[in-house]
Image (cartoon, rainbow, N blue to C red; front, side, top):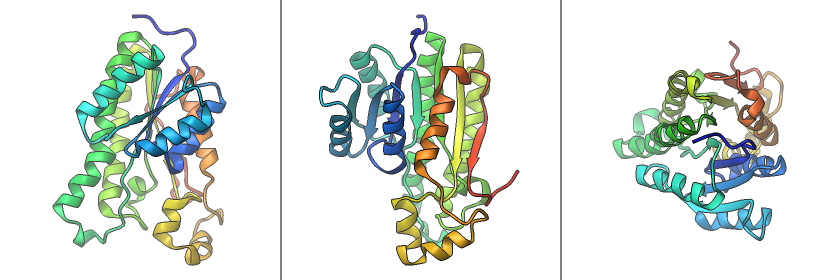
Length: 251
């Protein structure tokens, strides 16, 4: 199998809401056909319809990334519907801010199943397909929490994102000889619904003052970072983690 000369078909998991929606919209604006994969299939369908009412360049897929069979089906369905797939953005995540010593085994398993296992398995499934065709771009959404141990998020969320960073390096090394790059983007607190729900609207100003640059991040800019790593021109960037945390973590 040979690579498509115009690699412009992208899958975004967790693409119907929040940061995922920003990523989907930006990739679509840049000319990508987008497969919007989300547990909330209705929201994914609404977004796809807003982007392209004819469903030629945007399609919705109801997917639970915690199930391997669902990810295998997603890959097959996207290839069937679009004829190919070139980019995977692993954005789906389960966010919980439960106090560390109160995290139950069931909640730990639920968070890890989506945030880490879902990302790892998607990298396996799509990575094998990309390697076979000789081209692919995988972008994993990590988090500042996975780098500094988390301050506003739960310990299971932080641990899962730290594992994503390690998996990014492992897959980058394995897939590099096959024309496939694997990178991560690690956002700090973004001006969006997740941070607002965790911090509380009334405490946002005080929270922002503790960020060295004095402000929350812009999800639209994170989407642009993802698009850069997804581009064909990013062939020499792999195993990297691009930080956007306002100076909260420096390395």
